[in-house]
Amino acid sequence: MKPTPPSPWNASRLDARRFAEASGHLQGDCAASEFTRLAVDLHPDGLVDATTSVAWQADGELRGADPTAASAVWLHLQAQATVPLTCQRCLGPVQTPLVVDRWFRFVATEAQAEAEDDDAEEDLLALEPRPDLMAVLEDELLMALPLVPMHEVCPQTLPSSAGTLPDGEEPRRENPFQALSKLRK
Ligand SMILES: [Zn+2]
Image 1 (cartoon, rainbow, N blue to C red):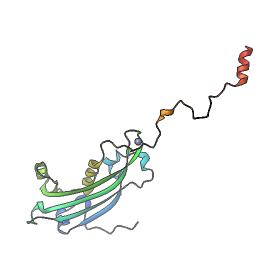
Image 2 (image 1 turned 90 degrees about the vertical axis):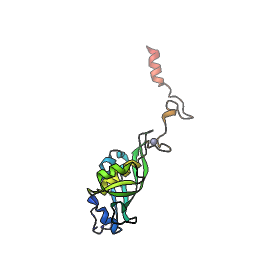
Image 3 (image 1 turned 180 degrees about the horizontal axis):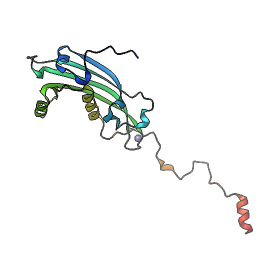
Image 4 (image 1 turned 180 degrees about the vertical axis):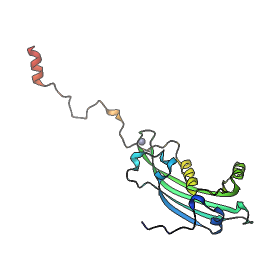
């Protein structure tokens, strides 16, 4: 893997206004198990090859007539991952694609974001305190999880034929010497 060039952006405390003003771009690839809240839902047997990673990217954008307004600051967050969840039918790992494609509009404070959230069609985030992009991404990944993960066709065969023998095989006969010893008694 090529080393990632140093980024001027701090994803764990993103300055969303500067990021939008600069049409900033961030991207990364991290192990799904690094998302501790998401990891709770991952099937351990599905993680053996350790290739379960989340590819994500974030783009900043200034919008609107008044670029000095906080509400002109937007962020586009996208991610793709295929994670092993627990099939609710057979309890085995089922590889499940997750897709995140979400636009956020920024407002000045968390209180404002909460107050306006019900009326806004888009999702709102606060400029201050600066958001942790990975925590925002994890929230979105958790929301992208299916309610009931399930294989289309479970890999294990159901034990419906248990107790019957395959065609052409007869039940084992009693050992003739045992039968003989019974007669002698
Ligand atoms: Zn299954």
